[in-house]
Length: 115
Image (cartoon, rainbow, N blue to C red; front, side, top):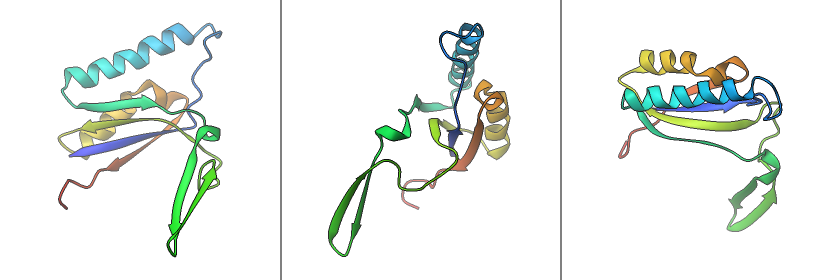
């Protein structure tokens, strides 16, 4: 089963912070562990929400606006898609992810193709 990990309020140490190198190494080690377990489908960082563009179509009219659609106190800073054997493994990996120490990770099942 595939799970989407949405990383909210992703504010890791800045490159100028003393803990940056360690934080980056730990995040990379997490990705390597996911690869070792053969569950990593894809992952990535997202640009700030100010770079977002929202598209909606209502009554045949397309509306394009700058920024995210929903106002939120939290923003999504990155994501992982993992193909885990079950929810227990997905939650275990979310807890192992160092990003969970300075962010929140929402774990959401992905609806299988054709469902």
